[in-house]
Length: 229
Image 1: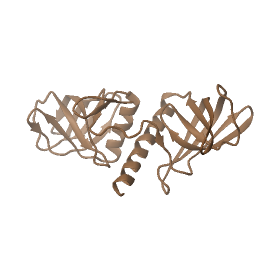
Image 2: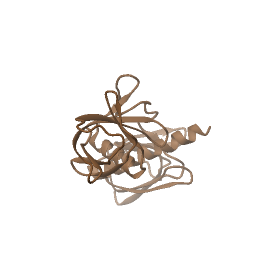
Image 3: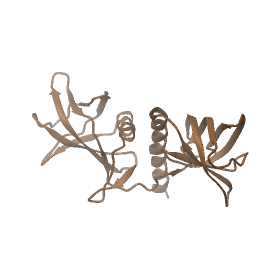
Image 4: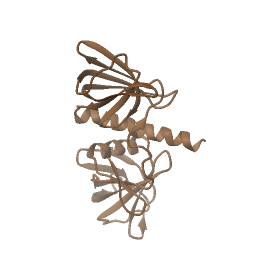
């Protein structure tokens, strides 16, 4: 999802990942600034996200007539991100700035993990041949997961249904449950931790967005833990 770019940045062009990041900016109330040439706006907030637009609080100072800009912010782990937008219109009366939605998001620090490890206690359950498959989630990405110590050794290419993931963000913080309607076993092997199953998701965009949101929040938790070391 994240790919090397230039100047030490990496880029993500996945529309669902971008949507999840925008929701995080809004819900976490990250301060953002608009930058264009030598102009830098005052800090402001992303207030609303529609299908076609982003709506920001009117910053001060602001440069009237600005056509496009980079929107820069730092996340909870102080990692710098930016994305490019076009200014659709500005309203001093409503105190809003209306922009297009970005087609890519850039961040300064490279991702530490494509597939994030999950804390102990994260569980998975699936239905397999009218039986229940249970296991511990070892790691997860938007495309699949690995579970260890399953209660059954399922062969490769077997289809799993009615999946449910109960995921933790940390040892004491629960993310919640994610439904996985269909998945496929693509790997079955022995590991130092016991039998390991590699599972590929067959899911729709809504399910995938939920997993992406987990991956983002889990990365934040890992960075927080690393900063405390």
